[in-house]
Image 1 (cartoon, protein in one colour):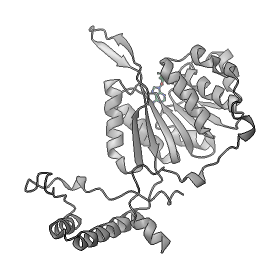
Image 2 (tube, rainbow, N blue to C red):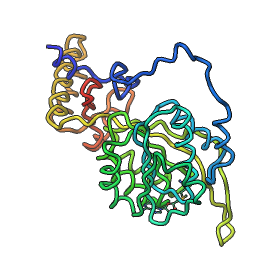
Image 3 (cartoon, rainbow, N blue to C red):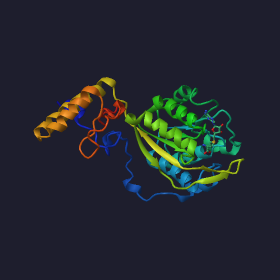
Image 4 (tube, rainbow, N blue to C red):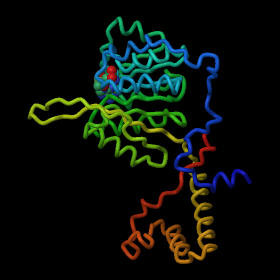
Length: 301
Ligand SMILES: C[S@@+](CC[C@H](N)C(=O)[O-])C[C@H]1O[C@@H](n2cnc3c(N)ncnc32)[C@H](O)[C@@H]1O
């Protein structure tokens, strides 16, 4: 009955999207402090429009997470790709990059530093994403979205890449402090809330410019989202049902009869009713607030 327990146990909010025992770990016992600081020379020199914090984060996330397949939507001069490739070089992994851009402008000298592990795909996201995944040979585990900076463009890119992400994949959105980009990320995260963990902005630095009308335009910021495994719809529904029954029984057992009745009503109608201290007696909130629990972290494949 382990499966029943797994299905009926709500995933703790802080449980990892991929089970720790499923991660591929690297034993560095004999070289704990081994690090060549010259590998960081790429951080100030990469031709990238990123703040110091963003450069360091892109390098560091690649170094710490050891992605096998990195996707970049929006490459331009290859600066962010160079940060990723340099971290992979420092690790000496087989990590691969797929860089998608309709008009890349990578200098030959920089391409020389990328080409041993990079596929450059000329095209537009999201249309070219299936081809990007095919070229990568599998699902991506680290993605940088830095292409179309309109809200609609961000939603298109993020939604388009979802089917090509593995469980536990990390997605970084660049320029998350730009209002249009922020709106796009918020919309995407809201739409896919059950599959995503939004870690918010991972950096605090911005860069600013003046629009032609004189107003200040804010850029910069990296926001991180992690993708959970996709639950099969049937599993989703079964879990919701089991959780509901379990909760009702628990409340009756604790003499919370009114609360139990309210929960039965919610489960029946899909409409949440607020309890004491939460505005009881007010209009029920829309059915969208009834949020079936997401899949257990054990259903990771
Ligand atoms: C800000 S630059 C990328 C910078 C790069 N990530 C870096 O940090 O070095 C944006 C790039 O996105 C590309 N782009 C715009 N729309 C795109 C789309 N739909 N798909 C892929 N790339 C796109 C542009 O051609 C441009 O080169």
